[in-house]
Image (cartoon, rainbow, N blue to C red):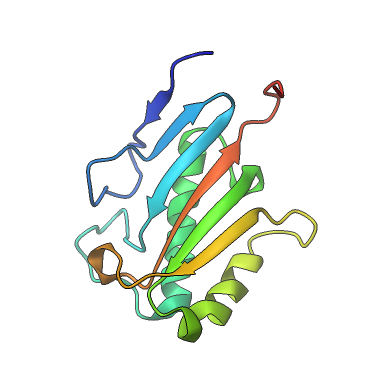
Length: 136
């Protein structure tokens, strides 16, 4: 087994804590939870509302995935964190499901939390699988 690779994506979102954008090992890529920040204006206010924040988080995930040569189709598992689960679940879900064909949706867990960094409404982390890696 090879040592893990720790990825920092040069044009990726600025981390809000000390972490790598992604860590890769055994053909899997573990992407750190992304916030709804704009990589081009990291100090700008967060977008208003769950729909805009979810779109921004997905765009940030796409940046990180592209930085390691992958895309949304390589996601096998996602975890979604919402600060107001009952208010925002349906709207977030509408955005999320539009990112995938109905027969290729990743496994997922969605949980309500009492707070996120930057007072964000949503954060998403994920696991992606590099194609062509041998199964063990």
